[in-house]
Length: 492
Figure (cartoon, one colour):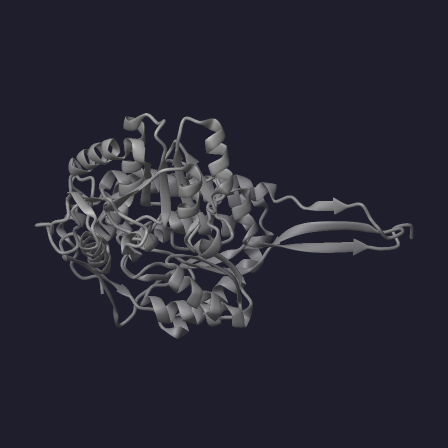
């Protein structure tokens, strides 16, 4: 089923990293039918990826259960050594992995390379964290008894990963699960399965035993629901929309799975009038347009204090107009295509509705000559809270700038959403920064920076933006369970 591939993928240093077969029980599994993968920038056919059957999924779950017995028995340092080897293989193959990612997802090559580095860091982090999953002893309330708690791996786990970060969302989940002693089955997004399969290829070389890490491919809904129905899967992690997260949460309730979810965002970016304008504009450009705006952390509502509102709009609009749109493999591209055409259509809808409701077009807004998946970076001023773009996550390169007057006012407006993933605050006033950091109902707050993610931090949201945390020492606990032991009659 290999078939022809897009021309720009023929130059890979390691052509074997371009794999289109599912990875089950350490074996590459080919199916009679499959799902085509295309370059979102050109519509060019890349390859067709296997579509796993229910029996394939059941086999993967059974193998994962068998592999769990020996994997959890390994010393944490042994598991860690394998994870570090996997991370090093990602770095040594970064160019090929980035080309594969840009080809199927669309993001600029420099961002794809950044994601590979980011993803490898999670394997390194959890390799060490697996050696530090400490338990505790408890002063006994019972006579002649000894009380203790130890952390044990939960068992077979599953991950359902998104198309916007097709490598890092896998290693952030699998690194934690494998370090904890669990086995993991990954279901990548149907738009971007090739990055996941390339990671599977490298996992073999790193020494990950058969069945410990598996990749099943196919249509999103039926495969995901089959995983939710498997009682042998004790925990799962999902990154994606809140809407899909609700469906998976309900489906997993029948088997009472432990759940970790990183869901939608609707990030406020708050700029006070005491800031250095250039620094604030630069930070906002990074927060808005990374991953071509297809990022759950993307600034979706840019609140600027009225005294500097017009200056900020002019400077931000000028900076946005300089962003170059193009194929992700063009080294000059800042903005690639939308991975899904539905995202491009949503951007167009938000722009249209805002302009009809009185917003002012600062730059962009026009259809891109590059194709229907491209969105010209757009800035809208004089946006108000009633407009659709201020109420929904756009998930594309469209910036909405809203004026505000007081700190208390903007805090209320920023919190007026069911989402609570990330927020940004720019101010020189330390007291104000502290008040806003405490008052914002978000799982993560960046103060005077648009860059705050990484392996050591607890990534996750409040409210309907998610459950649990990924990365940090908290991330590995989602794949472990506490066991309390009481030993009585210690004087016998």
